[in-house]
Structures are given as structure tokens and as C-alpha cells.
Length: 117
Length: 117
DNA sequence: TAGTCATATGTCTAAATATACATATGAATA
DNA sequence: TATTCATATGTATATTTAGACATATGACTA
Image 1 (cartoon, chains in turn orange, blue, purple, yellow):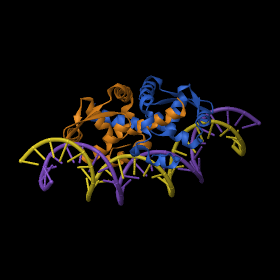
Image 2: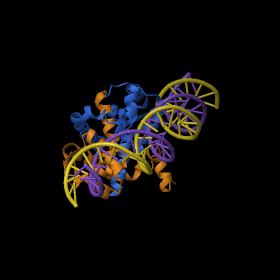
Image 3: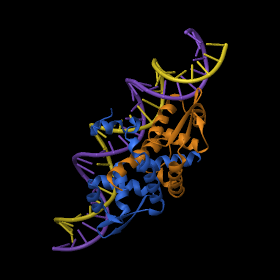
């Protein structure tokens, strides 16, 4: 991996490291959806979903097509599914440990009141 | 993907979305390395490398073994390489576009003085 | 063409994260 | 056992990001 690739990967992982964007992507695994369907499925308000959809679009994770008043978004399955699958494999083995990393999730642990021991 | 998996994936992607941690992981693709070797290869100071190595260790991306005064870190190739490879595929196609996403890289674009037009 | 439905964009603030710097620990050796 | 080398940890601050809220646009329909 050269520096450019590393930087682009950093951006890609940044896209996926936000819970709203990740929920949207996960929701689109099930198939194309309109913005309002995505809002309902992910329990997120419309403005924020639209913001994040733009990010996902620019970064190539989703495509869209207008259909009358609606805009239908779809996952770029070809490149995104392999990433999610590979991540899923890792998480299957190490998911439990990751919550105890204070560098990436100090705040969340405090907020959700998890016990650290 | 259920909620737990999504949350764990979010953490995993957060680990990989930091340039220092990603550089360390990329550096370890080439094989096991001591902390000071990683510092040299990635051009990062020792304290920060150690911090990030702990994160990478807790989250299952690297393993370590003490060897005298040194500590040798290795990549958990089995789960991490597939993630990096899949990310590499995406980036090969969409890497160019991603820099123009203001949501994930506003600050960096300003700092590096890139032209946006 | 006025209204309304669906979606997109602008922007401010709170929260999370990265980094720098200081310091501690732990193993080897003189 | 004092010293030195390699690595780890604590913590304050600056930067970055997420999220909330207000508002704009664009397409269809009465």
C-alpha cells in the first residue's frame, strides 16, 4: 500500500465508522430504498440521512436514481459487500474485546454506563 | 447485520480510520516488527505508536510477543488482510472522488490547501 | 401556478478524537 | 543494584466530527 492508497482507505474507513452511515449501508444490503424508507428503517431523521447519503454517494458506496418525487438509493454491492463481510468476520472473533478499547470508545462506554471492572 | 454487529463494525472501522493506526497496520503487512521499527517505518513518535498499538491489540488487529527488551508486533493477517484488500478494491475505483467529500475530510482539505473549484 | 410532498443543503454547537508532552515500567547489563 | 535501552501509560489541549435545527430545492398535483 502506498501513501495515497493508505490515505484513501483512511477516508473510506472514516465513512464507515459513523453509526448513521453504517446503519444506512446495512439497511441497503436488503435492497434499494427511498430516503424516507431509510429514515424509517434506521430510525434517523431525514436531514441527517440526506447529509450522510451525500457522503456515501460521493465516496462511491451508494448510487441513486430519481423516481418521481422520490430518490431511490442502492448499495454499491460489488465493492461494499466484501468490505462488510470481511469486517463481519473480524467482529465475529473480536467483537467482544473491542468495547473495552478506551481509545476508540471511551465516551460511548461512559454514556451507556457499561461496567469496565 | 444485527445491532451488535453493526456497533462492533463501527468500532472496527473507527480503529482503521485513523492514519497512524492504519499506517501501523499497513507497515505490518510486510511482517512482524518491533515498536521502534514501526516508529521508523511510519515516521511516528514512540509514545503515539505505543498508544495506537494498544488499541490495535485490544481490538484484535495485531498480536505481540516480548523478545528481551523489545516487543514484536504482528498483524492478525487472517481477518485483517481481507478487510484491507476489500478496501483497496473500493479505493482503486473511487479513491479519487472521496477527497471531495466535505463530511469526512473538510479539515484536511483546507489544511493541505487542495483546490476545490 | 399555488400547494404539498420528498429530498437536499447550510450552519452552529456539543461531543469525540488525535496528538503532544511528561512520565512510568520493565528487561537487560555493567 | 544503578544505569540504560525499549516500550507503555497518563493527561491536557487542539482539532475534527456528529448531530440538531432551520431552510431551500425540485417534482408532482389540484
